[in-house]
Structures are given as C-alpha cells and as structure tokens.
Image (cartoon, rainbow, N blue to C red; front, side, top):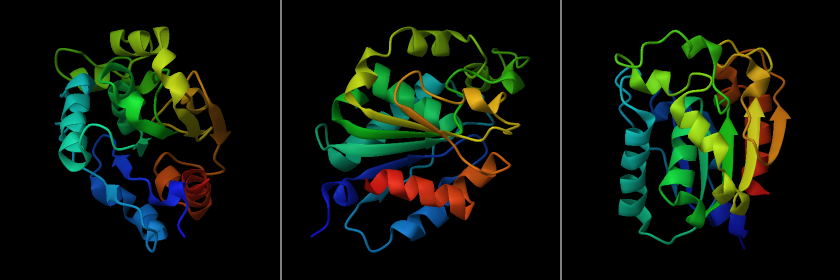
Length: 200
C-alpha cells in the first residue's frame, strides 16, 4: 500500500522566467506513485507582478483543484518558494499543508534584487533584503510551526545571493552539493534529496 506521504497531493511552484516544465525531471521521478501533482503556471510578467498577487492566484488554483481542506505538500523553487510561503502565512495555506520544501528561494532576500525599482518590477523588489513582504513574513512566522519546513540551498548560488541565506527561519536546512541555481531542480544529486524529503 502507498504511504500517506506518497499519496498526498503535491503542488509545485516555479520561479521567475520559469514554467511548469522546470519540474519535468522531478515529476518523472515521481511517476508510479499514487500522488496527484499540480504545477500551475503563474504569470510573473518578468517580475512585475507582486508576489502577494501571485500567492492569491495560487490559492484560487489550489482551491479549484482540491477544495478548502485537502491536506497537501508544496514545493517552491526560487521566487516560487516565496510565493508559496506567502500563501502559507498570509492566506491560510499553513492550515492544510503538511510539508513545505523551499528550494533555492530568497527567504531572507537576495542582493541581486537590491537595485530593482519597485515601481517597475514589484515582484522582483519583493525579494530584496529587507523588503516589506519579507520583513512581514520573517517578523511573524507562527503559522509555519504547524508545517514541516525544509530549506534546500546552493552555497554558490548567484541568483540568490548569498546562497547560504536561502533558508526559512524555521525547520531543517540542507546545502545541496551542486554549483548553480538551476541545478537545484535538475541535477540528480539534488533530485535525490528532494525525492527523499517528499517521500519521508
């Protein structure tokens, strides 16, 4: 019989300039399990859409697929991890989420977004170190205590800089032995770690 973890619905949230195709290798590794997987396309508009707005879109899609109460796991890559976290903390997602995997996500901000003008690229500006959104999320993360949180990061990440701060303020964290941001979702060593965490 499949375990509870291997049959719980899984939501995959992509990052900036990505599409759901980003998760094709991970999804192939999950084939054969009795687990519904949803990887919605969230139109970032090159980082112009505020992350709270994208979290609201995500909320609507999850409710449309599984209603209000079905327990899920969620994995967010890069910007997608901040979108997922916003949904968890601000839109009640934590109440129905068992496990949250944050993969290469600027949960403490990234220096690469620091000079981006908020009036032009609101979503990118949300990922600045000390942005209003991140200050809010990091200032009160009580709701995350009910969720099993795991952060995966690349020490040499040039997209989330410094890479070792791409971690949530709660839960376990793991440095992935890869060299680049994109390898967090493509390298076999990274996929092995993600699959192990999802099936545990």
